[in-house]
Image 1 (tube, one colour):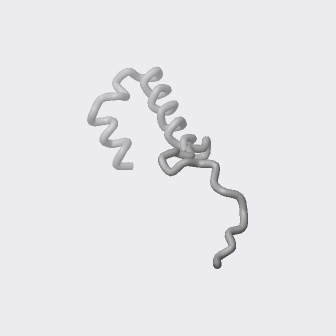
Image 2: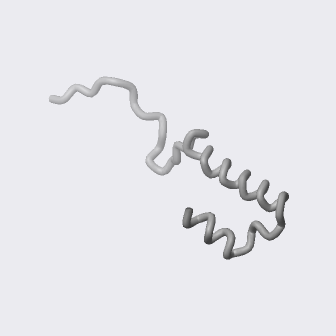
Image 3: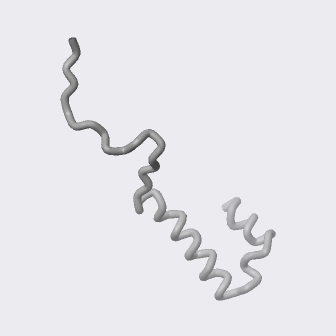
Length: 55
């Protein structure tokens, strides 16, 4: 007979546990894209974005 110790998980199987540590880099990237666009509207052209992504 097995003995289970510890507390049961409070998360359901379908729940996502997203933290600020997980989301932070994407928010920073979005902020940089917005700042770049505000400085120079040509910033969001496809050729420039492709150049940024490859770097």
